Length: 214
Ligand SMILES: C[S@@+](CC[C@H](N)C(=O)[O-])C[C@H]1O[C@@H](n2cnc3c(N)ncnc32)[C@H](O)[C@@H]1O
Image 1 (cartoon, rainbow, N blue to C red):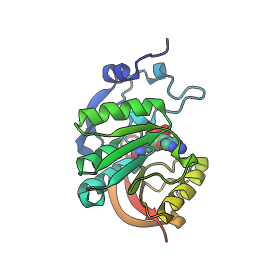
Image 2 (image 1 turned 120 degrees about the vertical axis):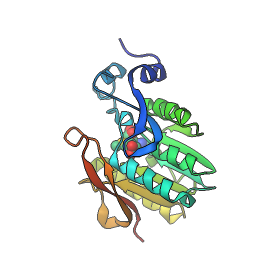
Image 3 (image 1 turned 180 degrees about the vertical axis):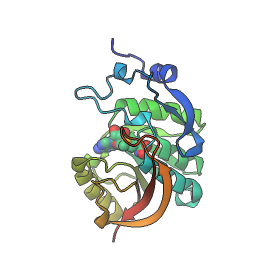
Image 4 (image 1 turned 90 degrees about the vertical axis):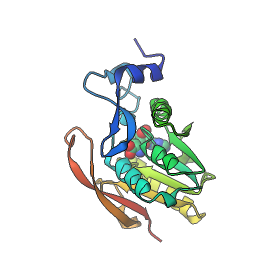
């Protein structure tokens, strides 16, 4: 039976707990008994439930923002490929003027809303593929672990480069996954953070914060 109320499902079946590597941020995280397949997540055309876990790219970026709040303070922020919304929540916590979390996965949008509420911050949600459009009206774009897939990386890089060209700051968090176009990026900071993945659960990796190279 498909789940009708995604938010009620998340609250009932995931655990609200400190985000991996980010003890000051609470997230609804999946566990083996969560039964995410009941949401359709990961089946046929439904996207995998990235939003239900912590990812090194988002964790390293959120950590960097929390350490350097001036990056977002008073600015309009877009968290692109928000997943759980961990990066958006860190930006909101650091005094961003407004934060929008965008994702193509409808379940992620529900998760972001719940996670923002759990952390008592305001985050707008946007269920849309912004890579198809022009640069958005924001001051800075934060993209945590968006370069996990070759086809997506090939779409994300020109979009973010176009945003950079019109003066939007761009920060990318990534543990140097194989599809990260690192030769087109400039490293800003590195931190050790936990990652998730079938074979990687619990592993600590070196995550990088990058921007688009000039
Ligand atoms: C690996 S997850 C990372 C989530 C989060 N940023 C983090 O680091 O925890 C990547 C996210 O990007 C989203 N995504 C993929 N393609 C996208 C697109 N074109 N526009 C917006 N989000 C996209 C996926 O649905 C997924 O939630």
